[in-house]
Length: 246
Image (tube, rainbow, N blue to C red; front, top):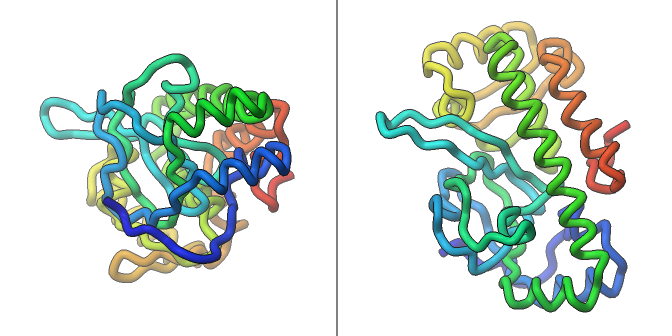
């Protein structure tokens, strides 16, 4: 089990932040805040949900696992959302393996407490449903992106998404993790990261990556990055977007 965080911490999850103040206080009072460690399996596929997980920082990937050992990310979740979509839609089991790609921390809220929050504060269900709609749009954009855009564009898009979900320009991320989430060869990812480094967009060393020129990285990404950001804005809950969003 992940390490529990005691004491003060920043509530940065946009779903929690978007509900009424009294609902925020209820959710925070029922939360267990734990660290997210790189490579951590949060839920296995088909595992029964006991808690919904609301990241405040970091990136969790919902992964598709193939029988031959290959994997690819279906969609990723950060502080704009939560793990447990199938619960809010009426299911009780995880639909994908949920793996931490970029470490951080998150609130674990039991299904029983979440049921009570939804019953007492309709805004909680509304916020979760708004995010569910946006996640569906993100998934659709990701399918198109993986089919139509170059590997360089997809890597840049994923790095920008990760940057949006952390509090620093520097975060832990390995090239192996990038290759797994995007279904690319490790050598391809290495070549792309070297090119981005030579351009001055990023630096990296021993599993630590730094965004040194975000505008340059944006110029290397496909239009899917901005389309995904706009999907959250147009969902009806603009507060799900990060503070630097248009």
